[in-house]
Image (tube, rainbow, N blue to C red):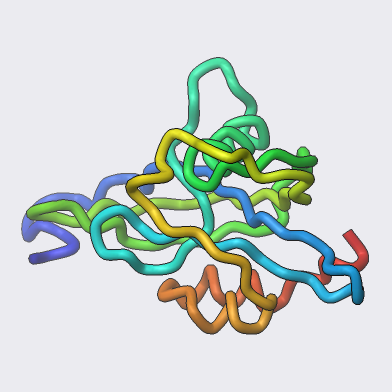
Amino acid sequence: MAKTTAGKRPAEPKVQIGAIPFRRRADGAIEIMLVTTRETQRWIVPKGWPIRGLKGHEAAAREAMEEAGLIGEITKKPVGRYTYWKRKTDHFILCKVRLYLLEVKQQLPTWPEQAQRSCRWFTQADAADLIDEPALGSIVAGLDIKAA
């Protein structure tokens, strides 16, 4: 499965938005919630396509609610960006993701994609290690959330 097609100009990257959900434990340590992808069950942060009528940070918050039932306070400016190849059935799509920090205040008892994904809290270091996309893992590892 090729990532580019011979003789064709590569397409411009498609924009996606994502949330990096975090919470502070009683001891002050930071935890990051990861979700699994629907098809390959890899650990990632909640992310998706822009939503018409919503600003980037609002769409990122919506993705976190739909994919993991998370509600909280989200930054209005991105804290990072990365590019990756999204796997489709017979091709790849180049995507550029804008990431926003979401300080989680609660997790709903049920949410839209609950039956399709797993979600779990990890230490910041473990979350960075478990993420399969190197650029996303580096962003998570390098976040200074205590100062956020």
